[in-house]
Image 1 (cartoon, rainbow, N blue to C red):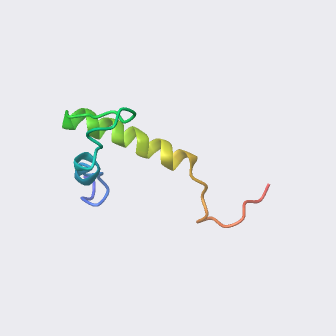
Image 2: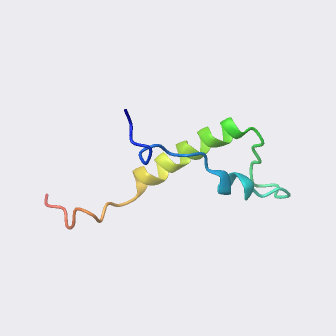
Length: 59
């Protein structure tokens, strides 16, 4: 059974802070679709982030 701290909860604050009157931004009103696209974006941001926790990498 997964620990309750391992799950990613619904991104309520980013959902509520979506730009309403911007032509460039995509407004998603469906909470399930928003959560799905937000998690995909989170995964992409984590994928591109450099890892500093391991220290200098050895080649």
